[in-house]
Image (tube, rainbow, N blue to C red; front, side, top):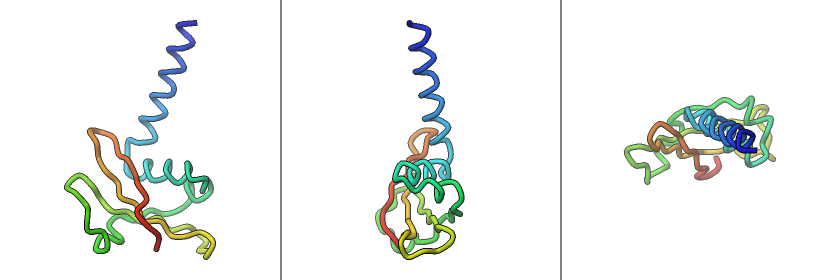
Length: 97
């Protein structure tokens, strides 16, 4: 019982670390959690695309833009603010383009 619990906890911790180890992985995991599964896997991500429109970036935050392909009016183009905390990155959507 304890061994199964340890394996489960270790697997969940490893999955969390892998989903937040890079800014792109953090953005893709955030998009997948918003149920944009195909876009989370295939959409290109650009750094600093909308940085001029975001005024509240701190020293450990960067601006990113995710473009869904093919472009569809039903799927908005997401802007993200990615914050680095230790060795992990956390993405937060800040608006649509």
